[in-house]
Image (cartoon, rainbow, N blue to C red):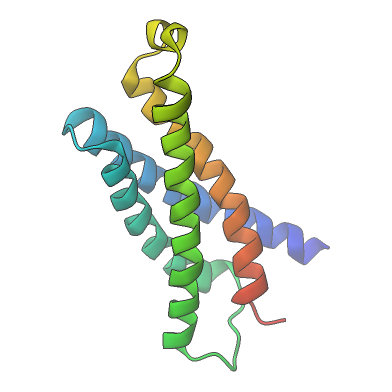
Length: 141
């Protein structure tokens, strides 16, 4: 149990670093450069996923000895693609669904803020998915 808690803590630190990368790219590209939020989220997610892979393999999870690096990275990319899909759906639902459909929210919250809040919500959901899926499919048992 101690090892699991230590691993969750390390995963949290790596996740926070990657969140900062994802959040910075997503909000920076959307709010300051005018890039569509789904494209910005895609770019932020891809960059943070690569950094997450490197840091997770190095510091969080013990590698499966029987899995070669190419296969391991391929599994990681497949798992990350599902995470990206979840990320994009949450962003779309929050922004084009809930926010766009609510005159009250539009009156009280700026689009820039809703992009930022949606990114945080999406990242939180995907962080749980990432830990569980990577523990199941990438870590040596």
